[in-house]
Image (cartoon, rainbow, N blue to C red; front, side, top):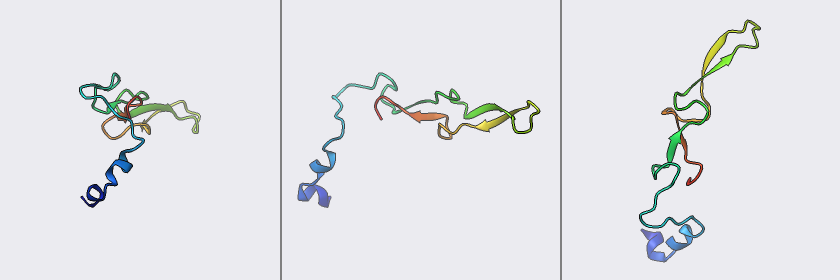
Length: 77
């Protein structure tokens, strides 16, 4: 509240992208998140175990997305 009263709130918002009223992002529809492009939202990826040279597949957690399989929208965020 103090920032608003001192008139510094506008300075904090300066430089941030402005959205038009009623418009939504074409990529995410305004929800700011999209399914992960790497794992398609499953949070799991299959990697071959090349260290052991046995050719076995190992399931690992995707490092690109959050626990819900979502990433921030690259268009609006």
